[in-house]
Image 1: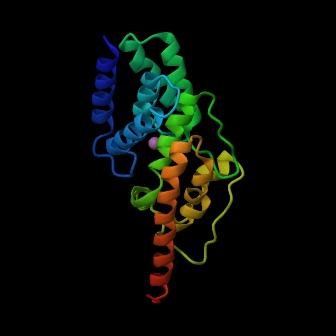
Image 2: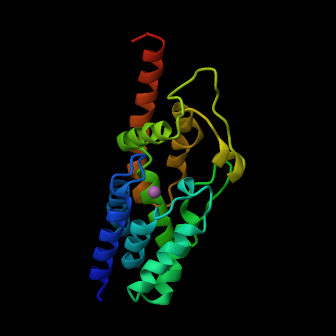
Image 3: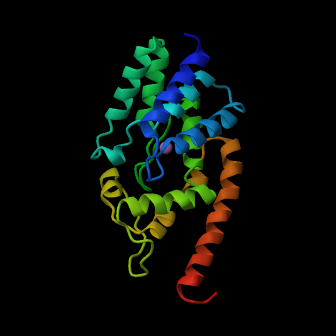
Length: 217
Ligand code: NI
């Protein structure tokens, strides 16, 4: 099987697996991350095959939906890629990226080990920002029964992955706890430039939201 066929089959597999998911981690999230990753990857010295596969498989079993189990994603990806006869070197690189990629709280550093990993991480983080990021934040919050906003609850800094996983904050607080911090954490110059624009969209949104909340605009 050639590389393009492997990518196409992986896209079809993920599309079937994640179709219709309503919390913002559906196929179309993966699709956007995949497109972002190709865009960023073209400006970097990377193996685009690894980048594309890791982007397509990165949410195959997100820990948020498996009671905090972080091992399922890398395992499922490995099984899938082995079934297509992909080289071991590529498989272990892709699994490593998937394992390292989830955001683990504001005070917890996640450093990707390879440029391919950095590109995919940037691509995933970009999809948490801007207009799409706003939509996904409320979709995810709603799926978890969270309040949109509650002025009595202040944003928290999560210093450990455990704290972040167990946090019950509002969707608005999620902007202060995670999304507004991401601009500074992009690995590549290409992603930084895109993130700057999306950051402004969120700042404007929050300003307007808080004005409307108090009936001021
Ligand atoms: Ni993702």
